[in-house]
Image (cartoon, rainbow, N blue to C red; front, side, top):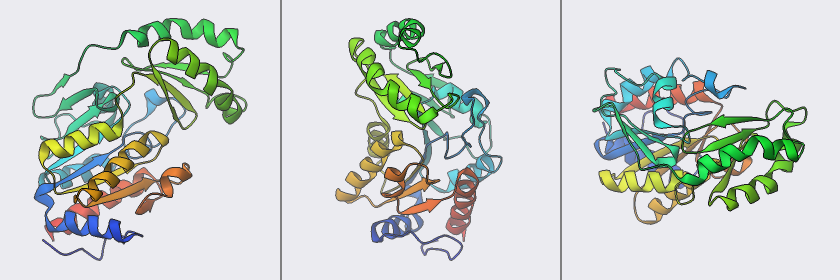
Length: 281
């Protein structure tokens, strides 16, 4: 159970190869952390229709009992990720953790409950102001607002020119967010207004340290995953080997920092299944 298997792709970097080797050598002390949208689930025009790739849950159920923990780290509310992922009540996923809202919420499969602090009051204020705000700046047509509980997001994917709409909204939404004590987190044709001080890097680092993990893998696909990549790089500097996986290549900033590039959620699920087989082999 200690040597890398030839069924796994070889990471492109020495640090990535070291991270994968450490995971395989000591899986009982390894954390595998994964973004949801774009990593475990394909990106779709309506986020409410996003579902985990059909191969995702079987792969996670095979892998989870063989490592210290599987954690899904997402900007979505934890309960939404659990529902869209189909993670509840699955044999093998009894110890799965979902860190929702960038770690502000936590769902544990063992208890089936979500723990979270009180929501930031600025989110409700910004949410109430957004429709009139977007209309006033001429950005309402083709954009739409997603209610995320502890955050609120403006999508431009349906606009006539999604990228132009995205760029035009960056500065006005940053000003709106600042008025309410929030920050703007950009993604793939989406700008999310959320409280400061929480991000995927903070959530991942805290969870790895909570478990005393000796190896970590993180897979993501979007700009919001850059902080998690940074957290793994910092953990490496502190002596915890890590592997960085990028799902797809739509975000060059993320792909350039990855040790391993996979073409999308189907390939991520296949990799996780192969990882489980490598550990048992």
